[in-house]
Image (cartoon, rainbow, N blue to C red):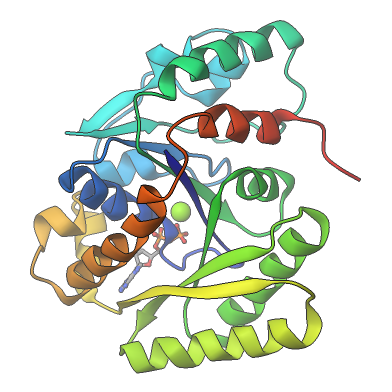
Amino acid sequence: MQIFSITSGKGGVGKTSLICNMALQFGRLGRRVLLIDADMGLANVDIMMGFKPESNLSDLFGGRAALSDLLVEARPGVTVLPAASGVQEMTHLEDGLMMQLMGALDALDADFDVVLVDTGAGIGQNVLRFNAAARRVLVVSTPEPTSMTDAYATIKVLSGSHGVKRFRLVVNQVESRKQSLRVYRHITTVADQYLDDVAIEYAGFVVSDPNVSKAVIERKLLLERFPDSPASGCIRDLVGDLMHDVEESAPSGNMQFFWKRLLQPARA
Ligand SMILES: Nc1ncnc2c1ncn2[C@@H]1O[C@H](COP(=O)(O)OP(=O)(O)O)[C@@H](O)[C@H]1O
Ligand SMILES: [Mg+2]
């Protein structure tokens, strides 16, 4: 199982649109996907995928629901763990509840090949922790200067105080691959200058495409509604490339590792 988180410095760069379509594509390639909506501020995987969750993470952490009650099979092979807006602290779980959660997660480890975590934007504690717990951190930036600056700031904080040293950059809303490479170069040049031991790899790009917003408005996924659209092709390519990471991952144990890292007290 491989665990990817997706984050950005700035909101509105396309994380949720990307991750939902990536989940669909991994599912189509025969992988069993768990999509965790961990954006506690602006949870909207459910909206983009067109379903309404009956219970969410806050019910789990409040002890009102079991993990299995929360999971929604949103598409064939794609299971979603919906988020709860307003769950602020993941770190204050009672021991009993924590044990229960770990037990339930043990069972999930064998059920999924790919875990995708939508963590939201910025450097809030929950966002940082979810990214620090994931095995592969995808940072999304657009070519806008503020987006690039904020992507760099996120990388800086995650590498400085959360021990994440390896990042994958996805450049969204570009005109061309060439433009995405310029964004990549810009961010890596600054990172090389100011950050120690940080590796940023180029993961891919998605072109700016009006059908992305159209699909969101219709509450459909781009890959289903506009499969021949340019952005759909980019997302399929991106997932194809990330498949290497899925194939080289450990067969089991990653899920427990993820939640342990997530829920352990923050390091100083
Ligand atoms: N490649 C793209 N081309 C055009 N619009 C896009 C693209 N990616 C995202 N968008 C639009 O940007 C807006 C924000 O996307 P969203 O996925 O909600 O971002 P985030 O999760 O980062 O806040 C949405 O209206 C979406 O349709
Ligand atoms: Mg989002």
